[in-house]
Length: 209
Image (cartoon, rainbow, N blue to C red; front, side, top):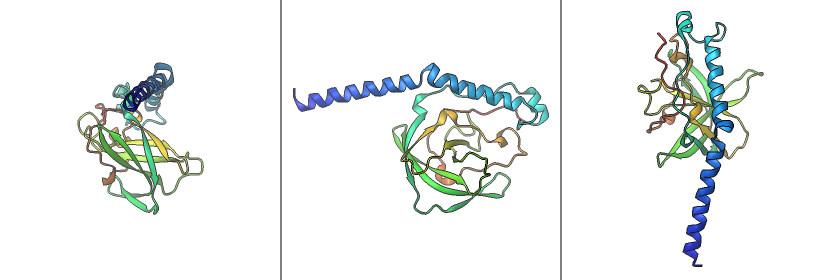
């Protein structure tokens, strides 16, 4: 068998295996049901008086948040590069104030056949009982149309010295100030402005005043 033909066959097998693994992970039981349960739990939390970001009138009228359908193309593995100088950024907030975040690493990945990069942040100070996660505020071309105009967030489980990280945009969520202007929220910085649409995760909630 000639070498080019063997390479074509191996590439075909690898492609089939890739789609099989993707389909297996993204099936109803492994991924869809847990994701739907997370969304149901969030709706229940938003309906409760104690934990809802909504004003009372909006909370009483609230039924559920709205999402894009889960899409495996928007669950991507990114290469992580920790920044040699993890400087502190005073991230602007929606009320004009600033909050300190540490530029921890960059995550490089591909979407829409284009290379993309996002900066992963850590809070400069966290409560002792608070789970440490990487924070990814970002904007994309759906903002102001299908999604909240001020951008959305991702929370990524924190692993020291990780070489890769999964960015699951199906779990992208809106900040509390999308539901109630009394909340103060981080504004995604310039280095996290994606020049593509991310039609995944939470959509605009139209019911808030």
